[in-house]
Length: 182
View 1: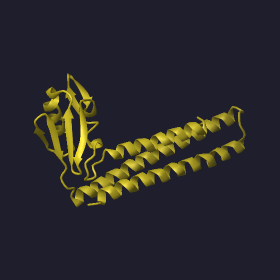
View 2: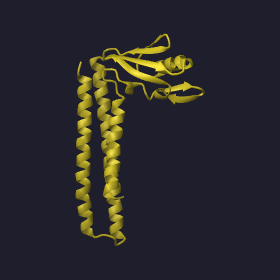
View 3: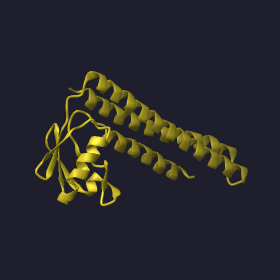
View 4: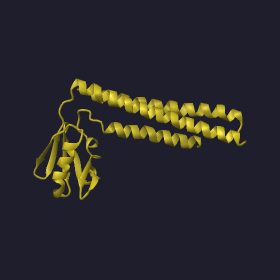
């Protein structure tokens, strides 16, 4: 593994964390809450974003407009079965979801979950750093590099991991602030 590969993989890990946290409900409606919800339609599980347009006409409401009106009941059922805690209301051929206020207890549960996901991302970064250093050590053992290269690689890897951890902290801080804002 090269340093560029390490940087790419660490960037992918922080990007994945950002995507995951984007799906966490903050009290404000956004399509990311439901767009990847699996709906059993046409005999196979399909992400909701592949079956309908999803919009937020109001800050605390999500509007789902299926392209095929025959899947309205399937979407409604999938939302009810999900762990989102939302009750769908069918209005004609559209489905409305009104987001209730988050309780203080639920906000704290979400903060703990976010911090747990962040720690998982940090573990991934540490594992990537170890893989990189193993690759450098293997190169030294094969005679392709010197012992000084190991020390240099450790410094380079630490700089990259520090930058990635700073990015994780920024992502988490932003999301926690969104959740705690009433």
